[in-house]
Image 1 (cartoon, helix red, strand yellow):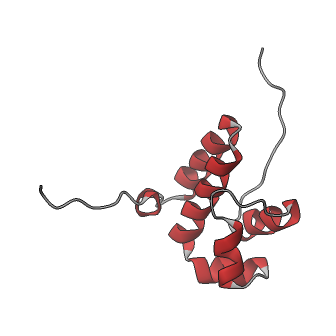
Image 2 (spheres, rainbow, N blue to C red; image 1 turned 180 degrees about the vertical axis):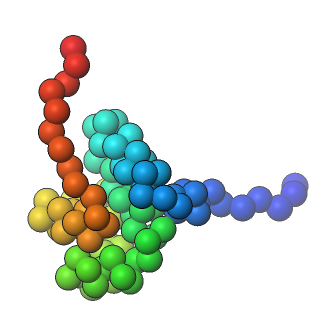
Length: 95
């Protein structure tokens, strides 16, 4: 077999708009594990250590909170989103 590399979404999140759209798609999925993974990808694109500092978390705590299957507190997720410069909005679901 040939050499393969692991796909790293963070390598492609190179603009504010791309990051926001990526998170919007994860939110729209309704899958909390997907959302945590997407937040983690955006945090890696921004620099995990800096995001942890800005969120007031330790780097290891941030990694643990964003692990698939983790059940982080909402305030932790909210702090991370704020550190990423992202706002969440509510809008009616289309039926």
